[in-house]
Image 1 (cartoon, rainbow, N blue to C red):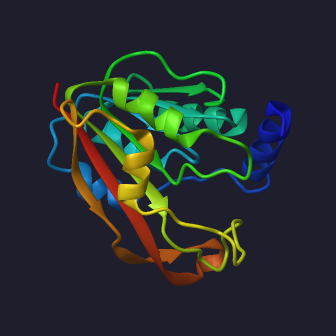
Image 2 (image 1 turned 135 degrees about the vertical axis):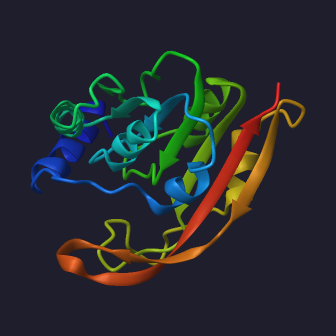
Length: 208
């Protein structure tokens, strides 16, 4: 499918719901990053912006990117309203065509799933190479479908974290897997609905 189709789809997803007044960070980000010293972070697929705003409040300088201009503009407005615009830069990128420049101490990719063609392994490889030595790549994927998920169906696969790491194909002398597991949590969806879901969590550190 074309870039135009993907942009139209994701702009429509965000425009169809009200802008989040106080978006919350993803649970796996908060539990993983809390003890790390703040630095420069890249948020891939920032969505409503909860992760980017949370990181900024912890002292990180965040580049947040999304394919949707609607999402990017809403996040920029939230950062300004909270006095965090000196710590959050929201920029639009279609990761099939471009990757944000710079070097980072953290790259976060939460639920970077799409119904459109995307070479995720190539994107995550670019993310790993964008890390400074000692920096971490946090990849959190769906390990199951919630009742409100768009990716329903019996043929949906959920590659495990080690499978994702193998697909990225990083040199083990320069990158090491620090975490690879499948914890469960109770998620809250539209209208306050709740369901138990599985996350696939992969944390990779650049060692050289």
